[in-house]
Length: 405
Image (cartoon, rainbow, N blue to C red):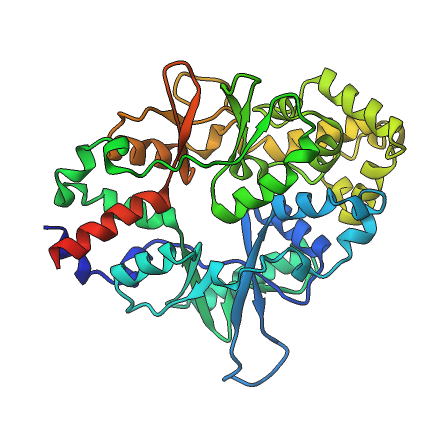
């Protein structure tokens, strides 16, 4: 019976989770950008605390999280396009979600049921205290300080380390005991009524900049933006999960390209040369040609280039776009097209899809394999029916717990 799982606590789901790498709330957007690049993490937690204090009882609170998409969306705002360097000097607080409930502190003894309830109430990340390792903390802090002299909180707060749990962690845990929920996992997502028919979308030929509001919203909702043709056929997606692995200079592409062109820009392996030339030409038309150089100067992106590059080559807009995007994708996007491009290693602008008749367990496995929180639901003609999210799935499991208690 699924009720057996109610005996598990949050700490049971934290086994093997690494301690959070974090940034002080007093940091700037530029600081967050540098930490994201040097740490290799997709998300960085932001904390309100003062480690210069000698008070051991000082409370440290995680006030939110930031990723590359937050920075890109901020740089794409009209007021920041002409002065991205100034925008990067803004406090990191401008990137934080106004929804304070997206990050919640929970006790290690909290139940699995409490965890699911918090997620269904809107929490995206649950911050959980874990056993500290003073030696590991000291070593990691020294390594971070060598990388960049930033106001970094490293992994420890007053000697306490934390990790965080996500929707994916809970779904993975439930999947490991999926047999306890029989026959629900074998039922179709259509019969379970968990397909959301309202979803974010943009036309293939629309300016990518017109999708910025939808991209920001999809980041908050942990979904994605469908890219449709004129007949409503799904062509691909603009996913925050993919954009988190791009460089901040993708802001220039969003400013100048269509949604369809942006899909090619962020696709596996770096943008095609012809797309780079389009970006360069359109930046010049809009008198934003200096945008990339200013971003480079203020975010220290130049440090990631080969020292053998000439100054003229380094500051060429086309070279800048090409090199930065390839840098950001060289490690996590090195794999090429394959018949089963599972896992985040090869996430692309292509959408992960299923059909209304797909079983719940099949969709769970599909989403986990591709490291996304959702799967698009389409008909045989590729028209979009809707989207299934981890939150939708958790509602079904929550209802099952209610019926067995």
